[in-house]
Length: 118
Image (cartoon, rainbow, N blue to C red; front, side):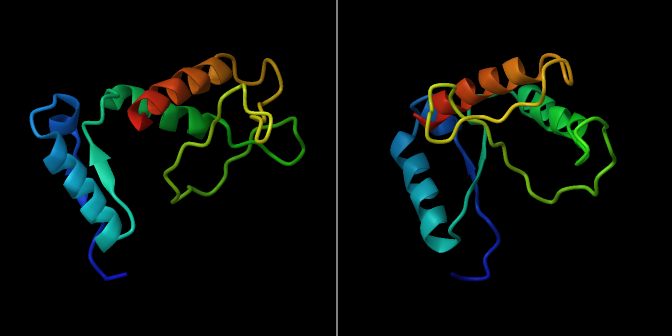
């Protein structure tokens, strides 16, 4: 792997079908050259993506299981949630009432990401 920065690929031409092959080639080229890709304009509004990062800030949960704590900021930018139908890797949710709306927001976002993936 080279020392190149992670390539940025605008996914708009793929989604609007104006240059699907070009976007696909850029995506594949990014994986080949850097091993990663940063995709922009992938069909989920930036506000919805930010909302999931905002939820993450709310779930800094202590080991005691009863209190929220302030944790050091994470440098990892990822979203880990799965389908409720996945018996192999089921979601592990916060206890009911700890963060109302979180489970539903995660599942909604999961299915939007699944559509992008498809």
